[in-house]
Image (cartoon, rainbow, N blue to C red; front, top):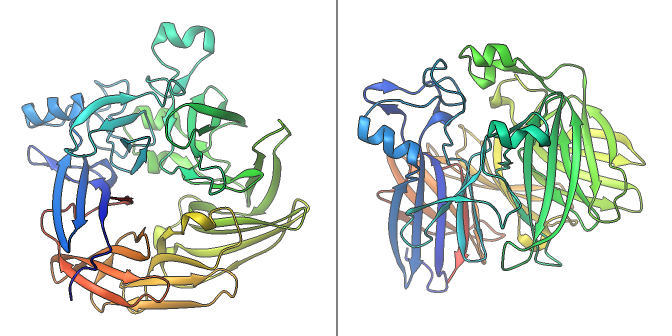
Length: 425
């Protein structure tokens, strides 16, 4: 089966691309050095370029062939380091002709979209400060060289205005500062900004932009900073106390207060979508698990239904182990028909699923014995990397039918890609 001639563009992917250094195995896969794929599809052909994000820290470790910097999940000595290595291994943004690699503990890294060469930190048009993402007080941050902004892995484009929304986090003594910044459709010129301050520590990986609000889960987390300073993994230092979570609707304009709804205990990994119903209703479809610290293998999609600040229900959409949603850009923040994700029918992640967000029905495209990574929407097709019998394949599926158009062998790509995006040519 040949690639469709109409499919023309570049699939970018990023993920941890190395699990050891100098014979020493990293403590966790998420500590892996960021590696980006550039998979160009045109004229029925596939060309793969894969390259590590060559930050100054990466270059030093590569030259020494040893671990010189501490990672967030337990790799490296905690005694000689005051800040964590920016792995640039989690997600990508392509905006205004620029390509950024993201890691949620620090600034964005700029890459050449054609060669994937590292070009330096990116300030998001001056909206983000490049420094360790911890704040004492604005009057002393500069003196201490801290008070930088960590860039959330996920950004979203408002389908009406074309503006891209990015979330910046800064962790301070006693509170967390979240900043939602909207950029012009074709540049990093700031259009607007909203700030939301959370008492204590929280972590937000994903959110949804509705016509009126930014929607996200704000899990109340406890962080054992002393244990982390002593060398423990971040996963072992975070707990989610209590039996509830907070779901936030932060108005995009007008400066009004955030509406906070208490829901059953939940830690959201990714949001499939959220949309308003009537004047005070909200539906939120999300992946996650019941509280931080639960096994990630329990991840499955759940629908929360809210009305007038009350959570009316929270029930499963699909009981199967599932993750990595993909939603057509035109449906973001609106009532939607089709959403896609990797799912498990007989074995773990052996399928791609299509969810009808209005009817709640699902259909699957399954490859027995295979493992699917994140599906990426590419015009009228769905692209997904499949691992099968020790080899990698590029599956091209039609949307929304999930009919397989072709399956191409893929050599030289990162086998552990997390998130990706498509840029049409």
